[in-house]
Image (spheres, rainbow, N blue to C red):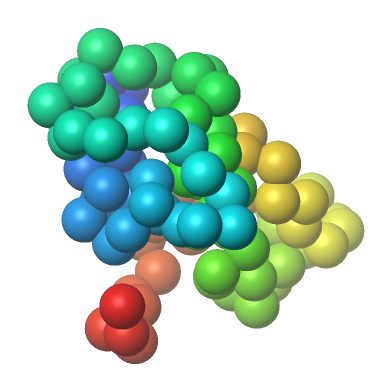
Length: 93
């Protein structure tokens, strides 16, 4: 089940462009390699960090709920980040 979550997270990050954030380059050029990469791979963690940064307000709120502090955009996939991927987005690219 965790791998299914990992695959959906990586696909969402790809679809939303976080593997192509010029401020946080990942060097991943094709979505076809995503299935081979664990959530702990440096490129995936960079894309997660990009998403955490982009969703900063929600990330801080969720991290405060989970850990009693502001979020640290570190690319780690912990409880607050898992919840962050469930937050409805505004739809902007």
